[in-house]
Image (cartoon, rainbow, N blue to C red):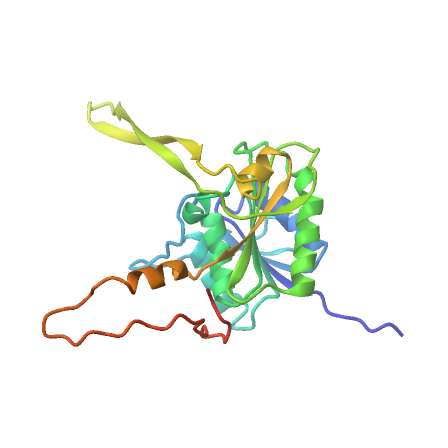
Length: 282
């Protein structure tokens, strides 16, 4: 008799809110793979980054939106959703996979810093859960996610089979259109937003400001997420939450930090310092 294996447990989160079309499409794919639990904000939380709720209570309620799916809405941020899921639903028994999205809008390049979608996935990785963030280059509520699904399933199955390197997660972005050329492993492009604040007046003639901007890519490499998306590929960028600029440590050790009355500290010898989980970061 063939041995029966239990399905993997999968936590699904997002930043666009529990009723967003993107999360429905992600749930559909994950239901083909494992047992799904959904915890998502009760409203849009885009651009929240890694914010958490402090100083006010969180609301956390079960909802019945999709038949047979265990779902909860949360009054907090995407990161709050992951923290509550780990502590109150899984009760310390971590899910096998955390997936976030599918976000309405890209989270390539510098956008990863601001993204609530990616911060939820980062929080999953901090909890030592293999985690992936998915985003599509389409802000419309009528966005077509159908061409993303087979890629999402393939990537998720690979992560479940192989795991991810310690303290690492994946940032996956999709261009629009059905004719995708494949998956390209990339680095994050050196790009940023040239921001402006459009000044307007309320009915009382008081000024208020609306953030606008133009995305500027300074990186001409063909190994970046921006290049991949512009050329019809699904971009996959491995992301780490260790923000140490390891390459800058030797430079700073050449500076003089002598403080009057304090004995000089010898520069640290370059080496890989084990992280709390035993991995060598950097």
